[in-house]
Image (tube, rainbow over all chains, first blue to last red; front, side):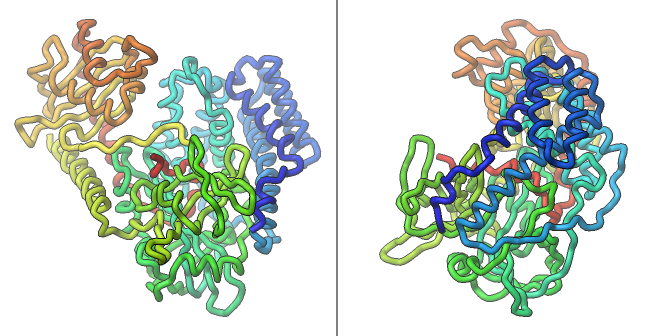
Length: 463
Length: 161
């Protein structure tokens, strides 16, 4: 890997992000009575996309908004312009990563496939709430405004086609609620909330969250590791893997995810329990096995739409062997336009031959003279991989991400030398179950939590 | 990156449900003596008006004129789940000291009881109950294997020492 490319400046990046930041600042004060500084932020966004097909509509939306005369469609255009800008940042960063790891580039874009029609009234309700947020601004949020999301989310959650927007709104609203009242907030996560806001705005467009076109694949799946996501009421485990087609064509980088809504009291090892029954791949990851896929649906973006009926456990497969042998030959799938965002960059890489540097607020690897920060915080608590294990490792399989202006490495697994033998520690080792003492205890506590919830609910219902 | 730390694991047997919503700290507390009984308890933000009644809508004997043990247990578990600072901020409790640091369930409860709060109206119970059901519904939604790219904004925050 050419680590120097990861630390080199990317042309135009600062300018694009400055325009994004200018707009994000507008949302802090809200758009009810725009001030001159906010008008400048809005104009900056319009200028930044002036050379794109969005130019005319963004200029109009920016002017109307600065005059305090914007409607929902204008807000939607602003969200789209901001998303397009970050899409260009995403593309530049991904090009840089591909150059650094020497992976062939996916040329074509992933075309959106057919999708279910959404209940338009719920989307309109969600957009109404988001526009109220934009008018009020982060400094103006209170519990009443934030609570307005609850009925929308409650109505959306049972609807599988609306799960993406519902899950996003639920996590976003919970975060805002925890930060109320906005007036006394010491630090506002300005870019993050603008990210969540504009993403949610776009998802209120019918069809925006359609998955990319779906085909079927047959061959061998070699897992690399598990990436875990959670907010108070949702969890997702995403397995990164190399897929080797049975027809001998080029191996591909793929992902397979499983997600579930959850009560906020189910945490830690309880998360694996919710997901495990729905994806046999999690057990294969824990056991260090490959899986044989037969006509498994996959999107053009490289997301397997996992169905246990199309998979059988295969031979043992060491993730580090996969990373050394198969990963360098695999091609990455293209990203659909709406998903192009720096926060979504998660490129599997194997890093070796580094020295570990302990810093005040974490770890960094020194790779070929370059510093690469390690994001050990993203490693799940319910697993054996710890920051200490990363600090004493000699090889690290991880996801290259981009956060707060720099590339960082999220460890998925490390190899340490114990008594002259390499020993691997995987972040997702408990995904399929565990015999580890601490793991078993955590699993039992989580099982108890769910049992108690159900039992107590029964008492309440039996009036 | 994560703004809200996830709820800390806590035992649910005593207080299966607690939340900060509808302008109240509210929840469901198991009876200490009767396994078949649960109490629906709440404290209003700002006024600390409290209410506690059983699942059969009988008023709690301990909640006459002052916080009963169920409400005290509720505050304790809320502090476990959300942290004292967030609970204090939501209920608008002024725990003297710098920015609520060092506050715990005791100081919170003491600060509220020393204002001699009034008994709230019982109508809250029905709403708390429906919120509990909403909470439980999260166990019933079917998991999905369709990608949720939005979750990349919500990484787990685990092994940080």
